[in-house]
Length: 268
DNA sequence: AACGGAACCTGAAAGC
DNA sequence: TGCTTTCAGGTTCCGT
Image (cartoon, rainbow, N blue to C red; front, side, top):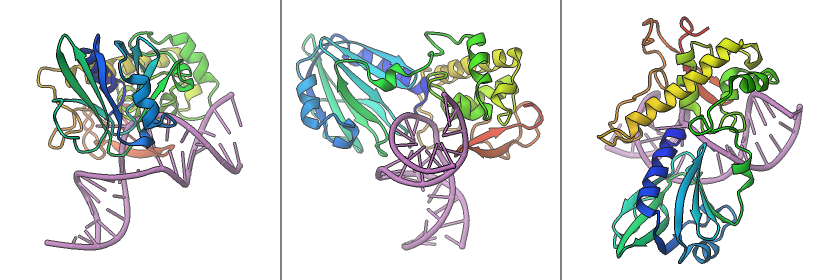
């Protein structure tokens, strides 16, 4: 689930729930999620702190406190959900933050079955946060900069788009969808793209992210990963289905260990 | 420097 | 039906 649109959705939720609040409960149930931050350090650093805001860069979240930060990465299966303060721990709950504001308490629970996510307290920005490339939503992507950086690569364009130091927040789905919008074959050498083609990829990334965001933050608040929810993407996970553009069957391949779906007729 | 592959985890779905 | 295999939207480490 979590690529840039899902993380942005989580950011908005956390900001809505916790901004301005004082943390009255801060528990790390599963120490492995701390990635070096112990359960003890987690509670000590967060209890009594005020949440000034919740920010996002790429797939990372940064809760800005009156003293220090809490960094949250959702990994592959992480999500923040709201619960009642007296609710028991939910299934797969790995951490909990309760915030009190004007006499009302909101309990935010961090769920993560596979535990690839992380929750770390820090006084300064994490190296992983600092290493992120431009965020498509609030920095924008400079075409000439992208062209120059792609020219230094030897591999294919699709795996290159997953490099978080190139563009922050693009994951396997967004990269797959963006290349379909841009009509670029995912197997093309990154350095072979013309300026015009790079511009099309950049537009494709923005278009795909905004499209996903509008679907996920729509009035029905549907989550893509919920069982029964139908795949909202144009080509991702649609191997052998007809191309939405030309109706020829889509192909599924594996690049750098990640699956890619594309139309060999429309994408050149 | 930058690439592909394995490792880190668990659950759902598909295969037999 | 029940057991086994495959796959999953991310990052990091390691060897090349």
